[in-house]
Image (cartoon, rainbow, N blue to C red; front, side, top):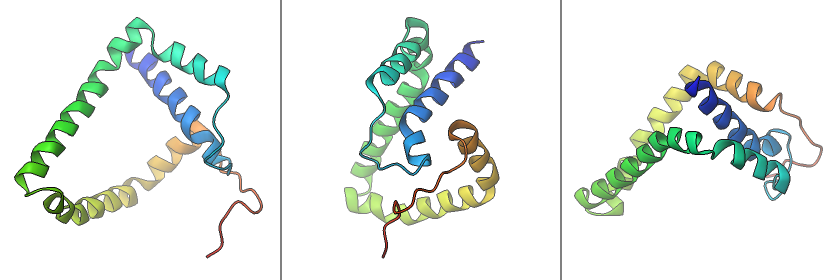
Length: 122
């Protein structure tokens, strides 16, 4: 179905971007060019490009909303004042939905692999 095709594309894009991080590799390591091109070709066919219209339009709508809020709340400072509530909401969402989020990450990237010396000491 159209939805599963889009889901496959999302999963491929997530793997492309996050799997090196899940494996404990440095952020500077980029996916190989061939893999990147295959994912882009698969995701950006004409049909899939049409399927991506909705997420893209949502992104544009949210960007426009951010601009409006910035203007309405006397600039960036007003928007930043509301940030603590949004961060709190995000933390609450993550704590409630943590098991589901973890399951999705493990499904897409597999289990995390710790690499010796990859963590920074504080």
